Image 1: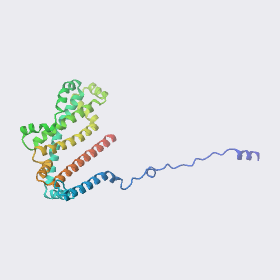
Image 2: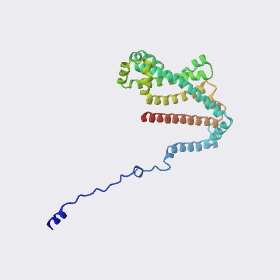
Image 3: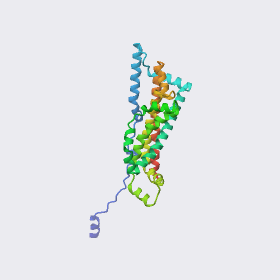
Image 4: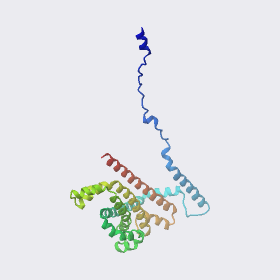
Length: 282
């Protein structure tokens, strides 16, 4: 009996009950269904305010502005007769060709200046002098050399995109791990092999950031050249609408240029994120 009493007094081991960890899906707050519409609130309010202001100005006898509803009708008319798509294709195609030329030259120049300190010192003064020249100031020279058309616009776009892209590529090359470059020298890689096998894979994420900047610059310069000199594209169509005293069509072109720019930038951002995910997975 004494042994039994002692056994009853002894502390019994406590069993730990398994505790279920809270699932992430249950703990994370669910986004509101209208949360995706929040970024569009301010643009919608601005459009409504412009619509009311333009209608008020028209009621007072002003014909310099058109309401948003009239601009949408003008945009639909341009889309139906095909002029919208023709001008858009010309501007985007010319901007892409000019960016391609400028980006290839900038890539070669940025890698050369980034790998060679001597070349960077020699080209510093030339770079600082030429990159400050406004690209629009080259329009008269480009017109004398190439005349009106695609080549003239391409030349100005290539010049405008070359300098910022080259400086960004040069800065990216300088941030490449020095040990990688030392290993490439020990292995006896040529300058071309070093650039393609070591430098380009290392700077790929920064290269996409530079290309996003280049796309925006190319589109802005393309529209500017078309407004100033080239009788083609979206910029020229907007200028013709302004000279024809058609504010609805002019505003339609202005809004469409903004939509195209937003779509191009969003596409480049999505491409950059996809490439970054693939490189991270690799």
